[in-house]
Image (cartoon, rainbow, N blue to C red; front, side):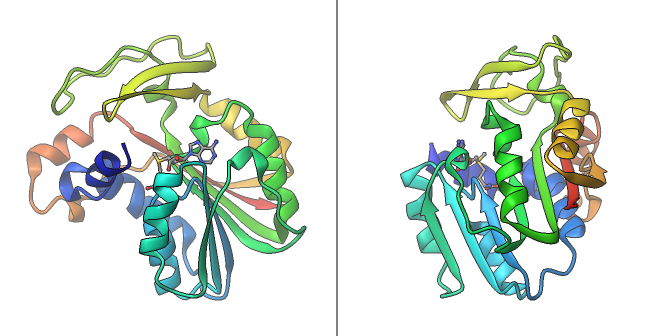
Length: 232
Ligand SMILES: C[S@@+](CC[C@H](N)C(=O)[O-])C[C@H]1O[C@@H](n2cnc3c(N)ncnc32)[C@H](O)[C@@H]1O
């Protein structure tokens, strides 16, 4: 699974993460110099390597998969970067010890998002930031399995029925927890944050290497939702 995800995630033009989510995330994060950063569900910590390169003071990635943690340890060849095998639900950091809690495409695996957001709030310094991306609620709504190959049609269904959805993804069955956009926004403010931005990760034309057909395909449906907030 980790290997298949890595190939997908770093697949250039064919990876929606690369052409849609990453440009929006980097624009939203802005200047990270001098920040202590926590990454929830860090995967192979590719983001950690990028943020350290951009001058963050420290990076801690946590992930619940040993396979991913092993990959992250290989990625993070920098003493300012560390990774821990830990579930997001067990997050426990000293109060007011980080400046930025970030998460890419991981919190839709959580049944109890509220508790994790509250734990992030407690770990953030006053005015600290939270920024996370999830699969867009129009994508997580339905449990219709996509057919193999590049997707040309999408099903939105049961949108207002939040809860678990089993999907075949990267050759495994995974459980995602569908929430509406309104519920994500409510969870953020309920945990003590002020929402500062919401992005739907419109495809970035410059990342398509001139592949106009793929750009047109990616303009059809939002794949990701990115939310940014500040601790009050
Ligand atoms: C789709 S991957 C994204 C990885 C990475 N953030 C990225 O963008 O490449 C989701 C990650 O979340 C991790 N994950 C899922 N549920 C988790 C949980 N409850 N606690 C910690 N990590 C979890 C998985 O092991 C996986 O590495």
